[in-house]
Length: 212
Image (cartoon, rainbow, N blue to C red; front, side, top):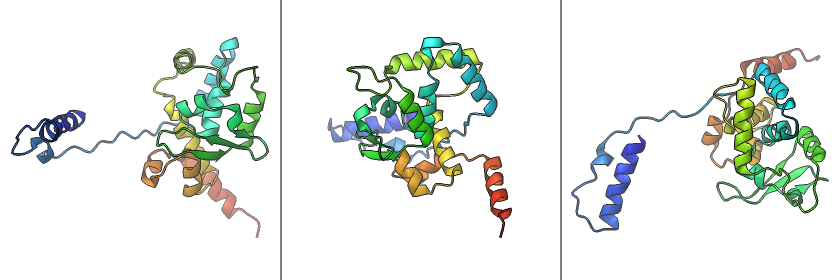
């Protein structure tokens, strides 16, 4: 699929930019296969316990607060690492994200747990960033932590999936979750959402067992 797109783009550039005369772009007549690259990866309780235990052993390199904050906010890695203390409104429990992937700034509500984590982070003099770890260090720590915990096939971006799925399990509406995640396309948001059946069962039990 990727190779077909690259080939088609090359011919398009050759025609429009370089003046190469071609009767047709043969790649456009090829039926492209459907790409199913959505993931349904969620973190199990057993995996989470192993992550917490392995992180505890890391001492000063502990990153559990960063992992939890990534889940609680459903923020992208870059957004999380770029977040500044000045972006937080402690009175309203919100965080403003001025620089996003789709170039649309947004302000997200913070869960009580997210606020608790943020307040627990030591605010060092002269450090404007909430997370004082750079991109490459965070990647290295993440790989080493997963290895120590014996966990496979878990990407950092899956934490965003986890957070978004939890928001739906909490009962938030699609527009509310989209406001937090920054998705402007609800179909794309659907790809990020994988609700656990047991969570729906618990919600149904609560509804039907409610006293009348």
